[in-house]
Image 1 (cartoon, rainbow, N blue to C red):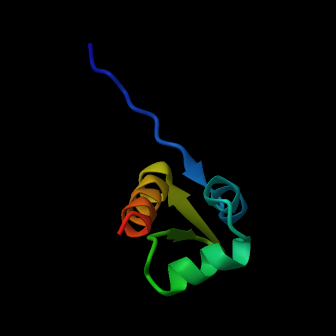
Image 2: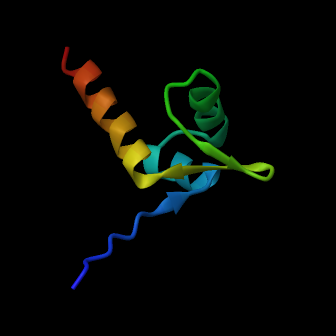
Length: 64
């Protein structure tokens, strides 16, 4: 049997809530390529993996 993994996809607003930042800051992170997003039509989406990667990077920077 094949195990399927479902990955959560976030909108800008949802990502902002997850990261405890404003939606405009999420747009800034995308524009400065600090976080990767996909544009579908007129909207950006972010994967759970990308949000986790950004959080992990922030933890490493704060411990320096």
